[in-house]
Amino acid sequence: MLELDQVAVSYGKAPVLADLSVRFAPGRLTALVGPNGSGKSTLLKAVMGFLPVQSGTITLDGRPIRTLARRALARRVAYLPQENRCPDYMTLGELVELAGYARYSLMGGPSDRDRALFRDALETVGLADMAHRPVNALSGGQKQRAWIAMVLAQDAEIVLMDEPVNHLDVKYQYAVMDLVRSLTRDHGRTVIAVLHDMNLTSAYADDVVMLRGGRVVAAGPVAQTVDADSVSRTFDLEADIFVRDGRLVCLPRLAGTGTRLPEVRARTA
Image 1 (spheres, rainbow, N blue to C red):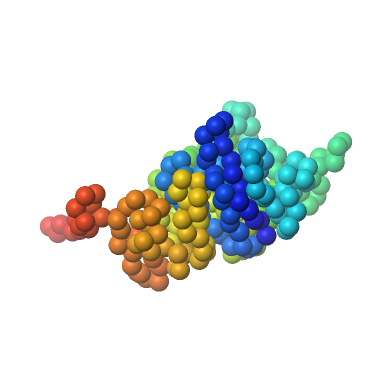
Image 2 (cartoon, rainbow, N blue to C red):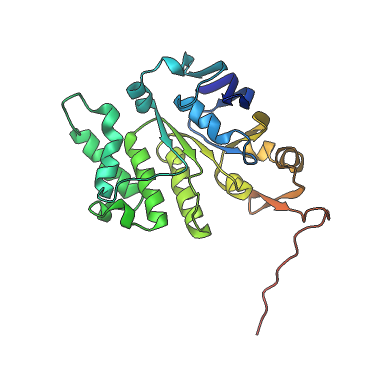
C-alpha cells in the first residue's frame, strides 16, 4: 500500500501540492488526471524523493518512504518519466539491462534470473527480435514500448508512469495502454499513471485521482468517481458522461454554448 497523508510540496515558494491525502490500492491501475499544473507529475516525483516534502508523510506498507535507501526503493518502485533519452550508441538490449542495476552486487552483473527477466520483458512488449537495434533508431511507438520493457525488467511491485502515451498518435496510445493495463492484469503490478485523456482513463484505469490546484477533487473507482460534476470541478469543463459498450465516455461541450460538439456523419458516394 502506497499512501500520502497531508503531503505538501512546493517549487521554491510556490506551493504545488497542498495537504494532499490519497491511498493507492495494490494490484490496480490508478490514473492521475487534472489540468496542467495540478500537481500530477509533482506527486510522482515526491514519491520518488526527487522533490522535498514540506509536510506530511509518504509511506509504503506503513514505512516512511524517505527511510528507504535508493537501491532499496528501486527494488520496490519503478519510475517512467515524461521524457526519456539515451545515448545514440545504446541498444535496446543494453537499455533493458539497466533495469537490473538495483539487484546487482557491487562487483557482479546480471544473474540468470535477471537475463530471463530481460528476455521476458522484451517478449511482452513485442520487441524480442530488436534487442540488437539502437534505441534511437526505433519508431516513437517502439521507443515507448522499449521504456516499458525496462520498467517490466526492473521487476518492481509499484510502477509510476508520467504520461506514458505522451507524443504518440491514437493507434499507439491504445497499444501502449494495452501494455500498461497488462502490468496489473498479467503481472500483478500496482500502476499509477498520469493521463490527460478522460476516455483513456475510463477505458483502462481501475481507479482515478482527480487533482486541481494541488488538491484531490475526487478519488475512487472510475465508474463511481467520473461524472459531470467531478469533471466540471476538476477541469472547469462541461461534459456529458454516458456509458457506451460497458465503459464511460466523456463528451465535452462547446465552450460557452452548453451544446454538444457537432456530430460528424460520413458521406456516402
